[in-house]
Length: 535
Image (tube, rainbow, N blue to C red; front, top):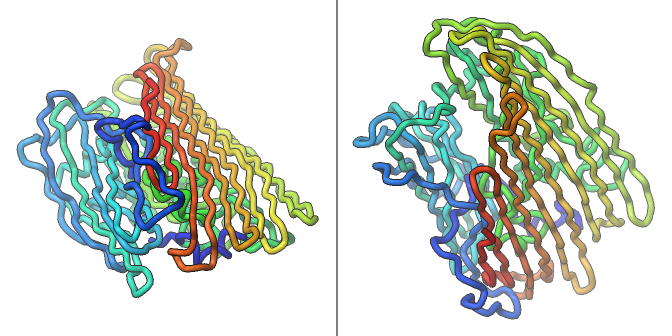
């Protein structure tokens, strides 16, 4: 069964963060309720194994409510943000928290929060039980401190449909907690948005980073971009160049950054919401922005004039909707200079390699092998000397998509890698940050006898970061967020006749020079049966 053929059974996303925070204490499996024989009308509230946002010790804090709304349609919430009183205007950390609840029947929905036009939060929602669920999401938003220092307009939307069938009203409250203290040296001085597609930076910008909240969504084929096939292959989702997608950013028409989008699966994905009722897939509640270091272009951007910034997704068929790519630009300034001048000194873009080979048969097969490389380098003359920044990025994707006639069996095994090196060479030894991201997906959906639909799925989000100075390691970290699920139900029948069963699990590991975090969750038929710490 194709992903789209199951649209009436799965959740379709309409117009969207960080994972739900860990519980204060982790109950051992022995203390958890015994799972039922099959899913009932209620299940455990959604949660993830990811760590909560840590709060500074003994720091004075202030809380304010940013938005409080019930989303029934596509009318955005609009309000006004006012900076907190009593915690100054410099903060060591700012934490956003969303608390939500919904009951009845509802698809998953995408949502966003804008403060002063800056997208500070993008999320998706869980699907409710008839009896109702509650969930929480936390996100460190310290990087947007510049936006929070003055009154701003607020806009929030979780686009929703409520009628006689889809009864779930999404009720949310969003708060910000400000912790008084000295900001980290890496906190941006300015947070900018594009004006009619152009960017005008302060003339003393020393470091410029663009972030793009890229999401393929909308319930159409770009929600499952990794499954699309060329026109020559008999499958329900078509794309001229196959399933390879790449999020590109350009400055005045020149390619300035490339990145691999994360293959997010929303909480109704792969025709089987029973996989995601309690534990969502990685990043489903935490839609992380893609970051591009544009510092090599600072010499160009700092001339006081507007420059065109364009974001596009390579591989999307021309004229086809389905991607949202809002942009923020984070700037660090040289406080001792009125203008920072510089020059782009090197720009080397490789050819985008993209090969999709279709093999017909009783089981159709599409093999994809794609990738791209880009290296840019430039310098800025600052008050503390000339600083050269070199950014190199190498992307690769290999996938095998198999399906049968009628798409009763539909399977994908895919790996994406995104290897980035940023080297900053100025006064003193050169500093380098190497980030190696790997995303994997291995899933199969089968519609068998008696309309029993089974989906087996694994998703992995991995990243290794190594920081060096003068060739010597100064910091490192490794992330491994792994999800696995196996769920079966009877399709094409009323909800109370589905006789669904399912087991899901997640293990989130983060370790390195800053310590260790390791948490594992297991659910059976929507009941939490294991919640363990590994460190």
